[in-house]
Length: 217
Image 1 (tube, helix red, strand yellow):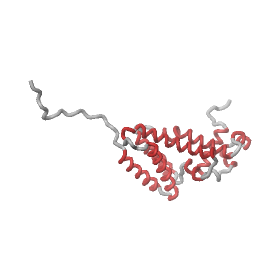
Image 2 (cartoon, one colour; image 1 turned 135 degrees about the vertical axis):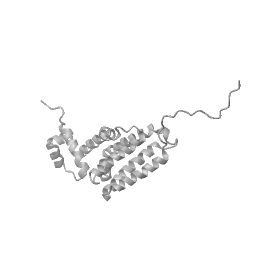
Image 3 (cartoon, rainbow, N blue to C red; image 1 turned 180 degrees about the vertical axis):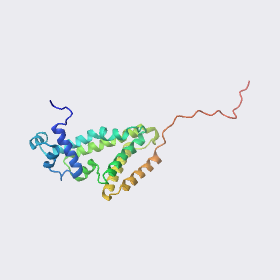
Image 4 (tube, rainbow, N blue to C red; image 1 turned 90 degrees about the vertical axis):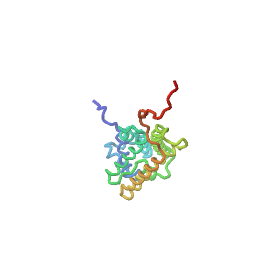
């Protein structure tokens, strides 16, 4: 009987490639390494992915589909405030940096830097990942729209958040110093503090007016 919980050969290949591309980079990962990690044979791989680029496209699609369940949902659990959700998401990247002693690199950012002149299909898949990430931040900012200045560029602000995350991760990884990431996020926090009004709270009962003019009889 087939165990429905076991990943398919295709899923194993994509999962193995996803991890290896993140750890070693796309160019430095050989097909043989992917096959060993996935416990698959070359016939299976070429059946699903005739070329290495086809495997890369599948990996990029898996990253994009995993943004919600693998990244956003764990970061945003028990964080109701939409602005604080943004910083909770950044905190997830900090945890990854801390746990890896600053060797962690954002997989999509790393691939985008490595593949500086990718084929159109790969470039579009990379762009789709960044767009999905930015869209998630736009969603948070839209929920907090009444706390933002009327003329704020919500998408531009969301792209700034992405830039801070990618740049902070890159600097921390290069310097092997998590303080680089912390300083970048602290600057973003200051920007938000100057831009975003505090969340509204339930109004307290209005105190009775004193010195009110008496009604004439």
